[in-house]
Length: 316
Image 1: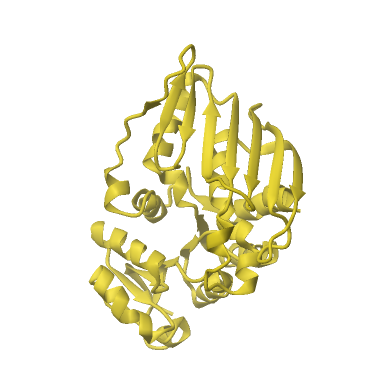
Image 2: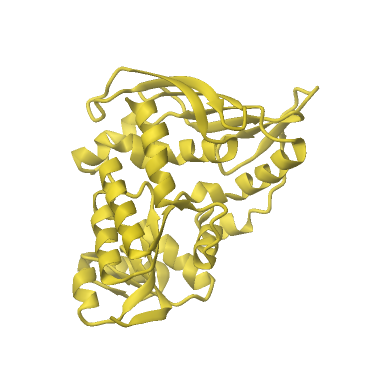
């Protein structure tokens, strides 16, 4: 099959696909969006001013050259099947929306297929590219590293319960959604080498657990704790301690600090133009993907390791 090296393929027509299209348009990178349902085409065009094609990727590739590079932004249950199809069709670089699959088995299958086919597959955790996170990384390096951190990944059950999502998606909500903040915490603080995890309770839409707590130490020697109570109040947040200050992300898009010897909490100035113009973190993530800059991108192999050694331990 021939490859179209000029154009980026966006697979999906929903809100996330629209956000990617806006970024590529802003970067003057030509793209084409492909979806299954013709009912979403008009909304996609209206939001992005970019043409879209319905009928699915199999039908599309029967009549068009294969993209060299694709961004996969479909529903959770379709992430793995679509990615497998793209690899088998000959796509060589894939940015796969988080978490990459429904479970570890799907992720491992993609990992092995990508390895044997010599394909780059990255899982898109855009919070790694927030302006607040980039600024925090600079401060952490200047301060001499992280000594401890805490994060919370409470989900709003009263909203999720009523979402028009399949039962299996809600049952996998921890990996599908909570992994956003957990990935960010351990990306900054280092991978855990010792972790004690506790779970209690259940919800009618998430039977595995509803309350989570734990603590441990990372490979860099930082002590961490975490908490979440999906049956109560709360929000995603993170606090990072360095020898000179506490960095506070609440919400994650914003950055505050409390310096040693003070009790005042102050805003940290961040250059967030890209995060205001586009979905936060997305422009810099796409730029890194197109340049194959792996310093902040998460490979499919590393995602498999994270699910095995972090997410499954916290959840079960």
